[in-house]
Amino acid sequence: MVPVCPGYGIKERLGEGGFGTVYAIKVVKLSPGMSNLDLLEEEIYALSQLSHPNIVSFIEVVEHKSVKHIVMEYCGRGDLRKFLNFHLELCATVPESRIKSIFVQLLLALHHCHHSFFGEWSLLHRDIKPENVLFSENGTVKLGDFGLSKILEASQQQAISFVGTPGYLAPEVFAGKRYGAKADMFSLGCLLYEMCALDAPIFSGKDNKQPIQDRIPDTFSPEVKSLAGSLLQHEPSKRPSSADLLSRRYVAEWLREISSRP
Ligand code: ATP
Image (cartoon, rainbow, N blue to C red; front, side, top):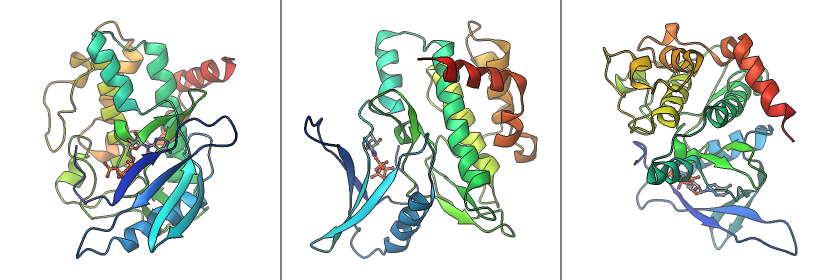
């Protein structure tokens, strides 16, 4: 998947270290003739303000020979794309308990961005996709890559730029309309669908007539199926917010399950 708005990062990972803490470093590459500096400042600012167990921790920015390096927490167990590819290769369904665990951790991360960020401000991630969902050494899910994120003031609450990754874009983003946090919720629904169906995302820009529930294998619970269906509603106002979901009893149960695991 190629982001609509050209990215500037190149990934570099440090190996495991026996003698100290290992960090991940994102080397910032500016495309010729393009000023991505503003985007970078937004990413650094957003990351530096966020502090949540399910969001990749920002450490610092180091400038070396005029090249900026974003130093952040290293997530050594790869990303959700690799996790899904692994299951695809084995033709093995991802266990529902695992999907619920990944889903609620992402939900908590998004809730932090949408509601708890800086009090009066909120943050749209705008690029929720499997490549940006990372696993730390102990298996904790971490939302990463805030390179396309957008800080919104309380009065604003909506953005208009067409950014994100085709395949995970909410219909309103695709259509060039104003959008808000519900666009991230749609992308979260795409991830949920992809984890259940191990299928490519096929929704963007389309008002699909076939109910999403029907495309998720029957081995999954009705709760998971209807959750995916509600997040993938074409109309943003019909989608639940992160706060709506966190107040649902079954989501609270999923949260209890992950917190009770050793
Ligand atoms: P793109 O432009 O494709 O979105 P990018 O250049 O902005 O990518 P990131 O999306 O931040 O770079 O990271 C790309 C990949 O690098 C991730 O999918 C992940 O596999 C790996 N990666 C990113 N951050 C970390 C991290 N903190 N720890 C370990 N691996 C990471």
